[in-house]
Structures are given as C-alpha cells and as structure tokens.
Length: 399
Image (cartoon, rainbow, N blue to C red; front, side, top):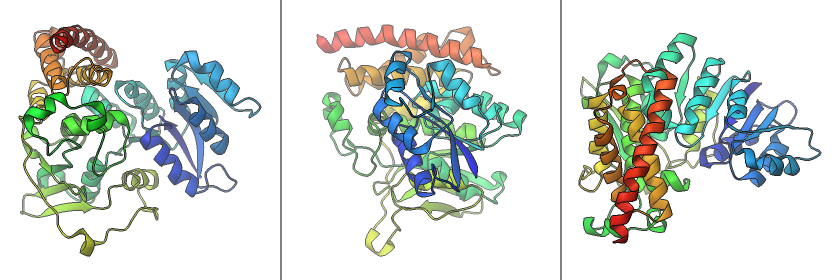
C-alpha cells in the first residue's frame, strides 16, 4: 500500500487525483493507496465529503476562520481536523510515499518543500514552486535524495519522452499550447475580454485561475521557466508552439534530428496517473486516442504581441536570481485584479512588466543562492509593489 498526501484536494488536479485513487480502492480495506492527509481551502463541503470517503489521518483547511465549519462537517467521523498555514505544513511533513502538491499559487511552495524534506516523492502540479524557487527546490531534492515528478501535462510528457535518454542529446524542448479561449479574437478586442470569455476553454476542463492563465498564455510562460529549472536546459532550447487540438502534450527534439512526441486525449489524469504509479504504468480510465478520427494536427507560432507573457518569461530567465519569484507574485496579483474587474485582460501583462521594472534595481533580486526566507521576502515585496501599481492601472481603466 502506498501512503499519499493530497495537498489541495478540492481543486481540479486534487479532485482528479482522488478520482484515480478511489477507482484503485482508496478508503477500503486492501486498497492500493492510504491517504495520510487531505488539505483544501474554502470548499469545506467537498473537503469533508472527500475526508469521509477516504478516511485520512488528518484533514486541514488553509483558512483558520473555517475551522469550525470543518469540525461541524466532520462531527462524529473521528477524523483529526486542523486549520491554517502551519497545519498545512505539518500535514505535508507526515510520513508519505507520495505527496501530490495541487495547491494553487505561491502558497504551494512551503508545503511542497516540506513534503520533499520529509522523504515523500513530490508529484508537483504547483508550477509556481519551480518558477519562484526552482534552484532551491532542485537543490533540496538532490540534498535529500528525493524525487520530483511533474504533474503538468506538458512537463510529464517531456519527462516521459526523456526516460532512458541522455539529457546531453537534447536539442530542444517544445511546449505545446492550445492558445486558450481567446486565441482567434482580433488583438484589439482582447482589451475588453471578460472573465467569463477567458474561461471558455475549447479543450480542457480546469479551474478558473489556470483557465484564464491559459487564455493570456501566462500559464505557458510559467511552464517555460519551469521547464528550464526542471530539466536543466538553456532558455534558448525551449520553444512554444500553438497546437489547437491539445493531442500532442509536448515534444523533445534530439541532436540527431529526431523528435519524440507524447500524444493522448486532453485529460489531466494521464499525467496524474503516471506520477501516482511511477516507475510503473497502470491502466487509467482515460479515452483512448483514435488517430483516424483525429484527422489533423495543426501547429502555429505564438504571436508575442497577443501573448506578451512569453516575452516576459524569457526576460525573467535572462535576469535570473529571484526574478521568477517577482514574476509569479505579480502575475497572481494581476489575475486577482482582472477577476475582480479592476483591470483589463491585456493589462495583466502590463502590471507584471511594470512590477519587474520597479524591482529590477533591488539588490535582493539578483541573489542566485536564495534561501526559502529570501524567496518569501521577495514574493511579499513583489505583491506589495504590484498592488500599488494595480491601483494606477485601475484608475486609468475607470477613467
């Protein structure tokens, strides 16, 4: 039996993880998986439902004000309940074979590091960890002798294509992108895109924040930085191409001219299931690809005027240090303000770029040997600056 902690169990990746382990019998006698911890945020009803089904050792909400609600929802269950950031970290530190980190945003950094240090194989869906603190995460993995497995569909595809290969033989990594919900809109119309319009993804069923990030290509920008950190290639070796069908999840090109592509239906359970069962493969309840019905696979270069996040990601990699922490923090603040309606769709990139410019002269930004404390301090500073700058952009939008 494999012990598993699911950090962020009520989100899209968390619920799909639970779908897979429930099908494997988790929560019943003789199951393949035993859940050591479940953590969530505001969706207390779903968190409690998951907990009653899976009987974890501890159930945690990140919001201390919802502790009473969680206790009430689990009254009589006999399950241990806790709340707050410290409780999330304690849950992540419990002995487990696998920790699925599906927490959204920079909030996932500390729990992921904690699980890694506790000896768990880290199944990482929280790409922000590697964007904000990639060198620290990879250094800690090597120091502990641990393992990080990517749960992003793109990075899982690359990881699988590289199995048994020499990274020195890699010529390029090609990240595929659907282009998101607004990929065919005229550039000038993007200025007025609404949250609902950005949420209408043509291929994938995902949470609100990642779906909007797909439309702006900030999600792909994060993945470019993540790929550099995870696979140790140079920024020049990483390409992005729009692939509307979302059938090829990513590709690896080798210096003999060969390209290895990972194909499959657009279902996150491919990547989740691969990480849960690694190093073996297990049968998964995903649609089998019918190539005859697929008909065509299309590719086109992304327009950086439409997707300025891609340019910013390359500037961040060139700057190094803690630029990734600033980029991610500013992106999260920009997304908050877009969802709230205070800035426009294209203003998100403007806000991130302005924050990077504002902090470019900060001496702490150029720290290439950052500690966790350094990363968290820069994350906080970037959020303060981005929030200040957002007020100015919001005033211009209102005017």
